[in-house]
Length: 519
Image (tube, rainbow, N blue to C red; front, side):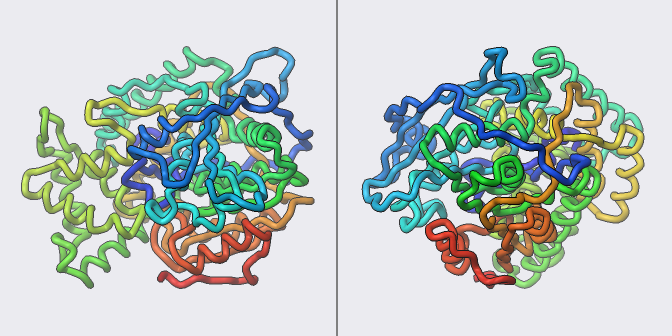
């Protein structure tokens, strides 16, 4: 792995994985301070948005809209740089509003973000509107709130940042995940430098304007534009970092924030990458135990770990060729593994894919890896990774240099088998990235209403320890724990769903120390 973008997060609902793909969540560095900078409320640059019906959006994503739901879209203009609004330069933010025809006693808007950074909140709002069909938002909530999704600045429909070619992404994902020889490692560095140079040449100093701090100020403009005095928000994975930043910048504007799949903002870049490696290693162990316990569902039992690692090793020297001559290199096999570990429901798909690869058919490996990469069958990509890298590198204050990354690669290879070395070399992207930086704050949300932080004990992408850390940092956080597997919890079980719904609807917090069983 060489692009940090592949280690950054698309924290989607577990049930939406096959629809939208997942990447590993971002852990960015400490901003160096404990107190959020003061922030005045951010007025919407273009006033009230002009909503228009847009049934074509759910039709494109799912084939139809959800029964009893209407879909309206709008574009909101925001300053490119909130610190320099007078220059007149703006970004367009794409919004969608989903409203139930059974809505009553409306509370306001529930603004949602799926994470990434780089994932589409417009898409997430559509998926969530289908309720139980896609593990979406329960009717009890949609009956009281509009669901408002937005593509953050630089993402998808919102003035997208685009500077990484499809060929570069193919090379990146297909690259050996642990480049042991110096020639392999140098090739990875060169690729990252090439990507950075092209993005720098296109965007220059504007790269830092894709930071989380700027996006959090955009969220306050959205709050104002939809007419809410205070923000109600549901953020997954990286979306928890965005929500925490908002709470520190605009504490008086918080009504209720649900931060699910928590990122600890105080972890530095290196510690975050190491934590992720350990999280995926834990999920891989749990996958292997499941295979041993249920061999009828796991065709690579009894030693699933050996089957997976052997498949990756073989792919490095003799990749299986699929349709159109595409080769299932070790990189593609590795990302099929990463993709599958996001949810317990993905374990059976991983076992089946590895078995099929052993039999000479890489189609399932490609399907899993392409879902993760947002790669279309024709070889084109969304701008997920362009945005992902731009945001995460803008957020960084310090990052290991190339030589330090090389050293960590060797250390983590022995300490965290399979995942350590790839997560280490993933830091190369920001190590050679151009542009300025705007780190986010890492202090308490003094003056904010209570914030619900949700953590999953078996989360591979944002390991559980980050949830109590985030709740503690905010000072007003209340921790809710799910003793389950996979990335993010709401609305996976009745226990989690009831607790989150009560908080969203009436701002009633679960008891201190509340833990929900796996099922």
